[in-house]
Image (cartoon, rainbow, N blue to C red; front, side):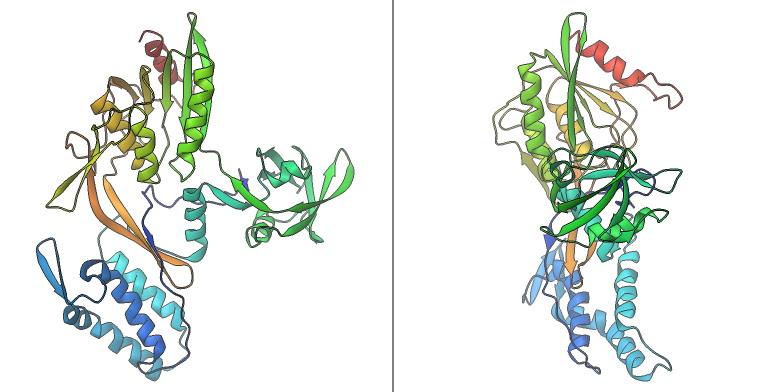
Amino acid sequence: MASKDDKVVKKRKTVSKKNIIKEENTKNEKYTFGLFEVILIMIVTTLFGLFIGSFAAYKKYNNRKISCNDVRDDTKNIITVYDSLVNEYYGDIDKEKVVDFAISGMIDGLNDKYAVYMDEEYAKSINEELNGSFVGLGVEVRSDENGYITIVSVMDNSPALKYGIEVDDKIVSVDGINLVGDSLDTLVQNIKSSKVGTTKNIEVLRNGKKILLQIILDNVDVKSVNDYYVERDGKRIGVIVLSNFAANTYNQFVESYKRLKEEDVSSLVIDVRNNGGGYLSSANLISSMFLDNGDIIYKKTNGNDVEDIINEKERVIDLPVVVLVNGLTASSSEVFVSSLKENIDVVVIGTRTYGKGMIQKMIELSGNKYVKFSVQEWLTASGNKVEGVGIVPDIEIPFDDESSYDVQLEKAFELAKER
C-alpha cells in the first residue's frame, strides 16, 4: 500500500542492494563479558569477517594479511568501554541503543557515501522494494479535504481487488478503529504489521453508504515494468518503462516484450529515467536478452584484479533500441545502459546518468537490522569508470519540468521510427 501524500517507502540513497548474509538472533541478560558482550563481539567481528573468513587464521585481502589477533586488538577498546559503561555508568543504560550507536559509528567511519546501518523499518522497506512484493491490501491512498483516507488506485491481482475495494472508496475504519480524520500512518502501520492470511474488517464509505468488507491479506506483487506502443508514420514503436530492478523485474520484462511482439512493433524505446537500480542479477538477465553469447555485460574489480561478467545466453531481442536516461538513472540501471551502449547499436537520449559504480553487500544482524557497505567497483564492458562520472548520452536533451510535452520521449520516437 502506498500513499501519494505520505510515502511508505522512503528512499534514503540511490544504491544497489544485494548479497544478504543472515545471522542467528540470540538473547541474553548478563554483564561483564557475558553472553551479551559476546554478541557485541560477534556483531563487530561480523563486519571484519568479510576480510578474515570463518575460523581462518589468516586470509589475504587486497594483498594484506588480517589475523584473528588483529581483530581482537581492534575491538578491545570497544569492549573495554562497553564493559565499563554497563557496570559503572551513573544512570540507566539502554544496551541496545549503545550497540546501535557503536555499529552506526563504524559505518559512518568508513567514508563510504553508500554505506548505511538500517533499522528494522527501513530494512523492511528496502527488502519489499527489492523483492518486488509486500504483504498488504494492494491499494494507493491519499487523505482528502474531509479527513477521509480515499482509495486512488487498486492494483491488479491484489486482495483489495479480490474482495471488492473500489477506486474512490473512503476508508472509515479498520478492525473497529476509526480512521476518519486520522493520519495515513495509522492505516499503514495496522496493515504493515500484519502477516499473510490475516483477515481485516474494513469499513468503507461508497456513494454515501457504509459497506463492511472482510479482506484476507496476501503478498502483493509490485509492478516495476510497464509497456505500451505508439504509432508513428505507420510504424509501431514499443515502449518499456523500467522503474527499478527488483527480483521479479526480469519476468515482468519478458511478459512486456511478448505483448509488444504480438503487436508487431518494429523498434523499442526503453525508459530507465528515475530508475535508481536494484539487483545486478536482474539487470544482467535483462541485458542478456539484447546481447550475443560471449559479450561482456560489465566488469568488476576489488582494486587489483578485474573480472569480466560475460553473457552466457543467446540473444532474444533483435530490434532497434533507443534508451532514455536522466540524472536519477543509477547503479544497476547504468549497468544495463552501458552494456547495451557498448555492445549493440543503441542510441541513448537524455541527460548524464547518476554515476554510481560501487557494488554493496548487505549483512543481516539480529533484530532484523542490516549494515550495507561497498565491497567492489564495477566498470563498463569496455572498462570505463562510472563511479562519480556517469554515462553521457549520445544525444543530450534536458527535460522541461514546466512543459507537458516530453521532448526526450518524442525524440526517442523520432529516432526509433527511422531505425
